[in-house]
Length: 264
Image (cartoon, rainbow, N blue to C red):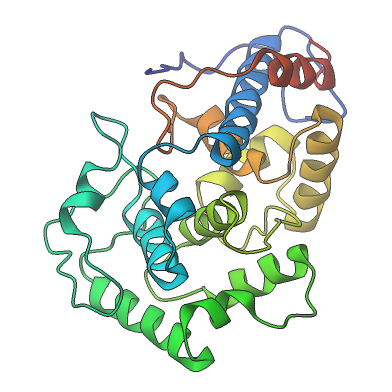
C-alpha cells in the first residue's frame, strides 16, 4: 500500500499537550495513523514476521541470524515489489566475503557505496572484540533489556551505519526473540529524518525534551516507544516507509488508542 501525503495543512485550532507542535487535526490524524501502523508492525514482528524477518527468527544458528538481521538493517527493505529481493540477491553466510557493489538500499537502509567496505570492516571488528556476534549483542549478562539496547546501540555507531538502521536492527532482534532487547527511548543522536519530524511534532529542538515528550506520547497511546521512531519519520514523508510490511493496515485497537491520546 502506498500512502501519499498532501501539502502541509493549515491551522484549524487543534491543540494537544502531547504534540504541542501540531496545529491541525489533519496533521494529528496522520500522526495517529502512523503510530498505529508502526505499533501494529511491531506486534506482527512478534507473531507472524514476514520474509527475511521470519528467517532471522527461525534460524538455529544465532550467528547467521544476527548477520542476516544486520544485512536487513544495512540494506533496508524496499517499498517497491518484494521488500527483501535485494537483500536476498546479495546475502552470503556470516564469515564469507560479501559484494555490495551496486546494491540498492531501501528508504531506511544505511548503504553508503563510498563507505560500505569501512562499514563491513567495522562491524566485523565489533563482533571480534567480544569473540562473536552473540557475545557482542549480549554484552554484560547483568544488563536488563533496556540497558542492553542502549549500550549496544552506542557500540553499533559504526562508520556508515546510521542511527535509524542500528535502531531498526536492535528492535528487530528484540521483537524476533533473538536477544533480550527493549528500547528505553528514541535514542536520538543525529539530526536525521526522525529528529526533524520530532522537532515539528513536539514543537521544540531540545533533544532531551523531545525524548521526554515522545515517552509521554507513547505511554498515552499505549504503544512501545520504538513505534515512534518509524511513525515520526512516516508522518513527515510523502509516502509511508513500510519496512517489510507493504500490505499491512493499522490495527483498529492501535489506531483508537493513538487517536484518543491525541484527542481526536
